[in-house]
Image (cartoon, rainbow, N blue to C red; front, side, top):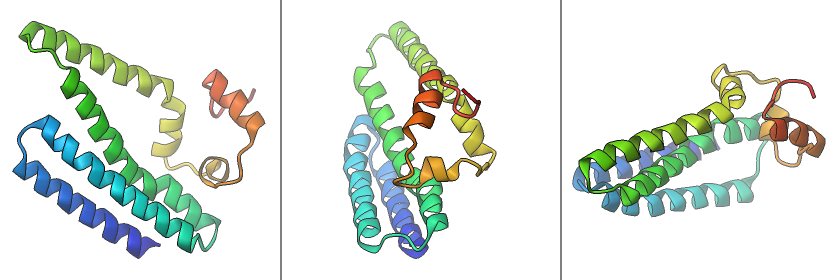
Length: 154
């Protein structure tokens, strides 16, 4: 799994770097990069479905660290595309627009702060609930996701 993942990530990064150099227009760049990332995600999914995981630790590693490294690129380029295609032409309007987009990003980050803290501090006590398929606990998710208190008791 690791070999396939790292080779795929390396190829994807190389393709993106090449397009970053070749294309100056952010909209054209994102329109080219997004389908490439989607193709890599599809190939990774096919590999996982065909091969499976050796154990729970490998599955957690994949869903906690490996898949997000590629999916985050898709999220980033989708955000850039949305921002660039909606950006107004007027200089004053651009500043206001970008400040509003920044507020939206900050609000999203603030709404997910507990998860970010869990992830960035490399905690693992909830890994089996968060990153293993088929371990979905509806009671846990309803309590923690609906209240925004991911890691506090109900």
